[in-house]
Image (cartoon, rainbow, N blue to C red; front, side, top):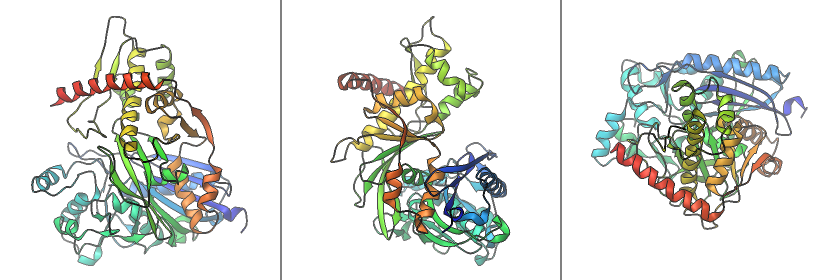
Length: 484
């Protein structure tokens, strides 16, 4: 295979934007492009995107990434797709959208889910299942039964690019609300609850396997579509968290932490949940996932809500301009508390203020709050691991560029925080999974290539960390009591 055909392409459709990464034969990103997607809020709690705009963003970033790599579409050996999980699309033949892209954050089905919960059916508005039902009722009611399909974003983009594939991988299926984790197939009871027994739902595919080739009229070449995966799962692969017990933290709008649980499904720690990590060679691996709901979003709040900084690049120098918070503390529960508390009613709180408090103290307290929330999630995920705490925590995402925050995270979790050169691990992982499917490399090759660009060693002694964690938990109690 020529060097040019050793290029792979990862497409990452995220919550707020689309990213494309061109990866060379050594596993390095040689071309990268990003474009933000506009969000629409037609009613309180509704969060959607124009699906056609998303398609346009995909074409734009692929073209720009290829240009940055000085490559053509015909030079790409395979492409992979990773995506925001829990989002849903209704579309026709060829991938034409028949309604909005309803994002995972959308709450339009909360009342429906609350009613089902009262009936003893465990459902969540954050998964795709209730969104499928809503789309089918509101945008497919007058259409011929065979004229529409439903799918998560990966299934929709794959169908659009290939013209015929209608599948999703097990990692996305496992986060849909319609999946039987034990059997690895649709849960018929869940489909019946949402009236989706006869709906045209996506089939099942491996996370690394060729499912079709792109139509030349879209990307200008026929490229094998060779991987589908949820964004957190692709990031796990890109960060080489392939061995059971390895763990990563993606610091984006939220903080998503995943622990490789191996091939045996077991019970996760408090407030965490099991998912399929990936399916490779017919073998499903599982992960435990926990969430810090407000991570990078708290930094955005300091910029947009309080005007502390004009850009996020100014936040680290501001918080680092003081040696401590001078007694100020913050619980950044701006959208509730995730793992281990799962308290949607909790709201943020700032305390310890004095006349000497400055913007710098508050900014530093917010970053510390994010770090201690990550510490709580880490403790929950590793509570049931037989081998003890992992040797390190691998970190990616936009907020991982903040050195001060990563040092705080290392102090809160008690193990080194490792950051690789590229923090775009989801797009990288999608490309690596695609290359795996066409024989460019093996899992062990990807693992051997991982290099930490910087490692942040914890500075707190074990007893000091325990004391700080005890103090943090008391502040969490205050927050939860205030929101009750």
